[in-house]
Image (cartoon, rainbow over all chains, first blue to last red; front, side):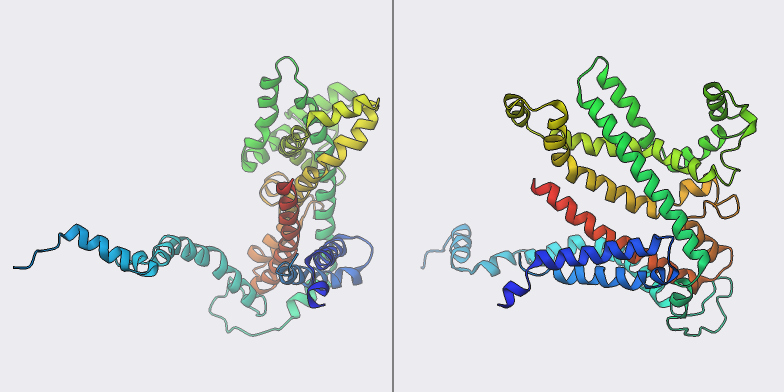
Length: 57
Length: 320
């Protein structure tokens, strides 16, 4: 059950999505609020990526 | 009188009777110790050059430290620097200038790089010579490229203005690439594209050469048109390589400093002030070391995140 829940693929995809969203938020020209939350998003994505890359395939 | 056992045979008997771990310790050092001995200098250098400055920068980012007042008392400011950077419209504008630079260079380099790779992949007369000529720009130092493009962009004596004048008919001194608010961002995009398109072309060429011929032969048998072959075979199989090139150039251009600094220094005004130029100004012109350390950490985390995706893409290409 735990092994199925903590598979690397979907978690890694989630982490990548967070990083990409954070980078887009950092560089978009539309909302200063989104820009304000960009660093937290990238940081969460990068930290998540480091953790989930240790999960089994 | 007892017969003496020869030393060599004694050594053999001891070796045979000894466990493996004891044998590995022969000479006073285990394999593990010798391995540590060899990699220790590298680890020490890495710690001194990369890890220590990183930790120090993280520490400074939470303080009011100023590089021009090293003896002033250090005060902790918590997350204040991060908060002010992430709500500062000027830094936001610098990030947008960076985005403009990164997006256009990636788009142009990918398109032109693909076209170049496609051409190089076809065997034509003088193909090796042209390949070498095309690759020259990426072998030059960005400092050299920045300096000589500065000369090329000179409105009075620059070759670039004369070339544009020759093609379009406008007088060469009627426009200024580096001095104009509208043209300056494009001047750095043009130079970066000129310099790095061959690199992207090389990566895509590796992708094109990795496609086996029998796939195209099978498509020919099925009477697939050239256009269909391109969309259904070439593009999907080259896509991981394009992704790799895009990520690599994206990361490099996100932290681009030297060429922009030499060409425009962020000007005119702050039109071409990309993130790294802003960082330099905050750190070494305004001497807000704590603030610029926080900005550097924000940029570092962004590059670190992108680098993770890059490594993942690289592994996927390697598995192919």
